[in-house]
Image 1 (cartoon, rainbow, N blue to C red):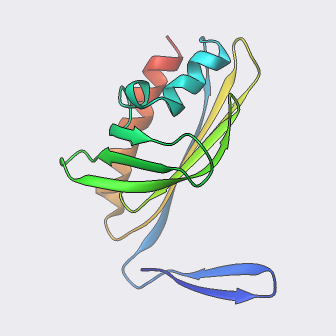
Image 2: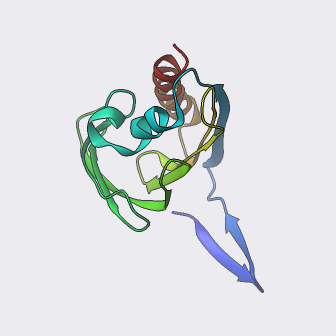
Length: 141
């Protein structure tokens, strides 16, 4: 688990030995309308098409997300930010932080980012890249 040190208003995260911060970012040109893209990020059935199997999601800041990870383990997380039609972010032990923002209406651009502290960056990177690929196929048809 990461240790946090606060210096004034700035946060400093100490990465434990054997762990590294993995960050995967992508901007995707979307052929879908903004509302259709956002539904893929915020509605459990549509989110499950590309993400983990989402069992429940409270689409609001500090709302809870319950999902089955790729190995079938039931996990929980929290919705960090929610601005309908514009952005959403989640935090869970399984995938770290997931954040997505949509710019524009028609032919919008979707910015997606995963960040996680992991002791197995190769496997985690492969898993997250599969999720990104699944999302890309749905929004950039």
